[in-house]
Image (tube, helix red, strand yellow):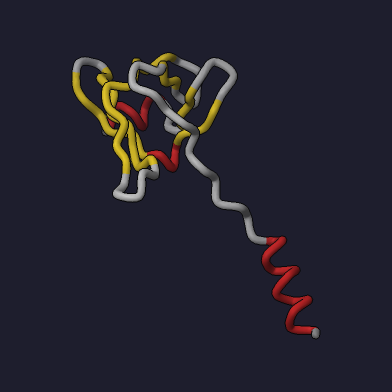
Amino acid sequence: MKMIIALAALAMAAPALAQAPAVDRNAAIFSAEGTKIGKVDKVLNADDGALTAIRVIYRGKFITIPATTLSAGEKGVMTSLSNADLKKL
């Protein structure tokens, strides 16, 4: 019984895995600072259909932004990457 309670407490303490928001082609993407990065050129999915990344034209070149950095924001889809991080991709 103690083991079940301990496992339940551990499960409640573990952070839930964030699920990437639904992203459509041509959706606007914003950086962590709120700057518009551009529009989604391509949505990349795993074999099971789960979003893995998006491709965006940023400063004249294609960059791939991982789905783990994406979330739904007030303006649309946001990445947790800063403008400086995006320049390195």
